[in-house]
Each structure stands twice: as structure tokens, then as C-alpha cells.
Image 1 (spheres, rainbow, N blue to C red):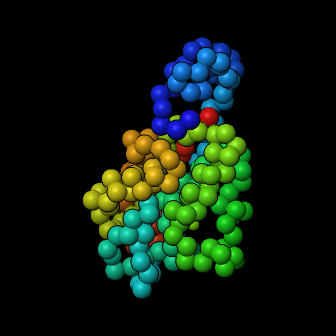
Image 2 (spheres, rainbow, N blue to C red; image 1 turned 180 degrees about the vertical axis):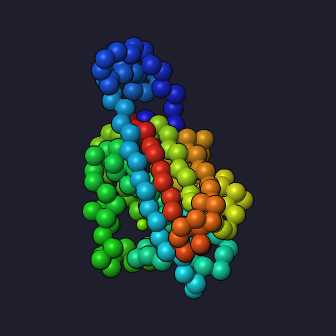
Length: 188
Ligand code: MG
């Protein structure tokens, strides 16, 4: 199920399972287990690269260095999804030694990740992510990122939250040497 309303019929205290109707109108019940996953990524900022975050190209004098487009937000989200599903990590599925993924738009990796979860019967409840960047200012791009990510994982933008923070000038992110991101997702 994607984007629908899930109503809890019965909570079985002491267990991790919830009984819910799988789809609106279904009469049978199925037991589902909520699963959480986390992801974290950092890439180096260098001149001469395009800056892509959450699938959105952002005007800036530097971009993230990586085998793909180095979209840290998407990579953190991929890892969170894979983690929640018990499917390993992004390096396992999309190795940075593979020419297939050279300079790839990371949203494609997110789509492939989501398809793996969908094929296993998983649905996404919500995702919450934080970007760590000293600059540029990211709030103007937040809604576009939510829409882009939501489209890739076939869910509603209101199920995806994106936050951005600086590190108050501290560390390599604070010095503008890199951008980091972390993400948490809940699936069932
Ligand atoms: Mg990465």
C-alpha cells in the first residue's frame, strides 16, 4: 500500500506486530511489523561539480565529489530504506567501482532501492532527514526535494520531511569542505 490510510484495528501489546487492513476495503487482516532504518552519508565539496541534493540541482560554486552525483541526502535515504528492510547498504547494491553507476543521478538509485522494497511487499510510512551544510541556504529547495523524493518512492510529499542545519562553523562541514545527511525511515 502506498499513500493510503492505515487504520490500526488491534494492537498486540508485548509484540512488535500490529493487525491492520492491508488495503482500504479489504476484509482480511494481516499482521505487519513496523521496521525502522537509519542512513548517514558525507561527501566532499569541490569546485567544478554540480551540487545535487534530494534530486534537485542547487546553484552553488561547489558540488559534491563522488562516483555518482554524490547526492548525500538520497544516499542516506537509500541506506535507511535498505536498513529498514534488512537488505544491507548502498555500497552493496550500487558499488562505486561499477561503471554502471558512474555519474548516475542518485534518484535512479533511490528508485531501484524502493523497487527492491516494494517487491518484498514493504510499504513506506514516513521518512525524516537532516542535511548538514554550512552553505548554501537550502530552504528555497526543500519543497522541490520533497516532491522529487516522494515521486521516486511512490509516496506523498507529506510523508517526507527534510530539515537542514549548519554545524555552527565546526568541523569539516562547518569549514565548507563537505555536506552530510542523515535519514530515518519507518516501513511495514
Ligand atoms: Mg554517498
